Length: 245
Ligand code: ADP
Image (cartoon, rainbow, N blue to C red):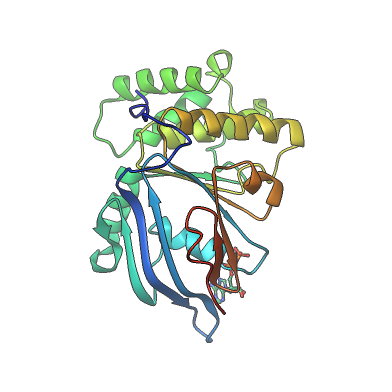
């Protein structure tokens, strides 16, 4: 059920681009320039940290890569689709088919079992309920929660909630898993478990971008893209492009 294992996980990536940003600017009403000209390619099979201090533009970049918003200038391509040309309905479809989201605060539906929450990750897939639930069982087993299927969010620890959220995000085998400060609400032990799970999923072929302000988390990932004042100031996989300000 997981994407195909890469020949050389952690090695040089030759996969096709999942995310392609060219000359991306984002200016908010009132004149705040949140992104001032960003070029970024994330290829299939990569695991990338987008790291930077508060206000550097991480959330703005997440919104653009997540096709939740459009750039003021420049091109954003997700899984080969240019975001600028799409209507809202098409953007939603692009998200549903290609992206999985994990948030700091889990965003699970209250009062619904872990199984139900994860199966809902396939709500717009067109698959019948029985298939959605069968896949949810498999993916909950994959994240180590075989014994928590019927638990509702308030009956789970923070780390378990985040593993449910990760299961929901990957059940549709997205081209890209976007994790926004995934350990931000967790104690350090649970946070390590969640990061270890993300590393395992990447080793099995899932392409992952982790947005974080935490340098230690970023340093443990194979690639670090550093943002400051709306620009990429360093990219550990593209040493020739150090960015200028
Ligand atoms: P980060 O996630 O790294 O903290 P953001 O992308 O949230 O950075 O913000 C980048 C800059 O854009 C900041 O100066 C912020 O105040 C500004 N900004 C973010 N969202 C908005 C908005 N909706 N309207 C106006 N300014 C915004």
